Image (tube, rainbow, N blue to C red; front, side):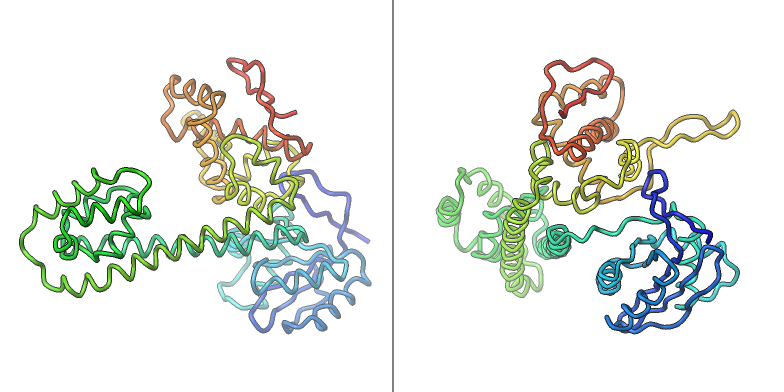
Length: 420
């Protein structure tokens, strides 16, 4: 019997062969399954209820033909049950990203969008172009729990940003000069939120007076807040007219400020829960031993690459993250290497952020960053170069399970082996 092999992400084909590939277009209450053999013949092509018994029955039936690979287009939420049942039934699982599926769909005749067509495209793409597949997270309780908490924290971050933008909009509406005092991220600081929650806005601050506001600020801040209070009252003096609806706005501002404080507290609680979970995951300590990698960054890296075993070399990992340069050559007019525009965005952001932090606090990383800047690279390009260099180290640390060890000698041109 002719069989085909599943390509691991960025690696050579695995030894494990598959006699059947199932494409599953997942849905909330029902899926559509299409099973193909290596020659492309359909072994199954019907709707499938979101039910463990029916799913297990299909997987067991198709295993009579040999090894089975089940591919989904959505590995989370509505796709979680089929993946769990497939694994429990002894099937392998994989994930076809949405962008890859849409590009593959353009190669098939017809423009209709049906569950049956999508399931067939998933199965046939997995059969003919296995390099497009991605690994589904391993059946690890810690990583699964981290994914849930990371998603919740991301939602909280979006809600916090929305609430802060709402406060800025309200202040700009009634007192633009006061809004300009809270530059950058100062609006999200605990002291500013306490002031807005206590005194509501420009009218409440004016009525309270500088002395009372300063006393309140000193009782709610570890640092001397006098400079901030001076800027606030200087801004209040720039406007004498009262904009219509100021009273209504000052009813809303303290409520939104309270929401921001509550959201920040929830994020702090989630961070503590993530930290407690990472204590049970050995590779988390390995990652956090590297300068620039904290709890959230380590969680993002682990969620996106696991133990790193899906990548054969650091180059494959860097390409997946989108921090490796892309070579473009066409005739004599286009020649060179350009920044990658693809890759796993969350992983790229985690590696970039950790490299930026390291460039500010780690002498070795700062020296490398400064050298790249001296070569004429801009800030972002220099940080990407540092992130690419650190990617080699992260790969070695995860592969060997070793903690970060700073080198005794750093070469001038070649990357150092920073991990044992």
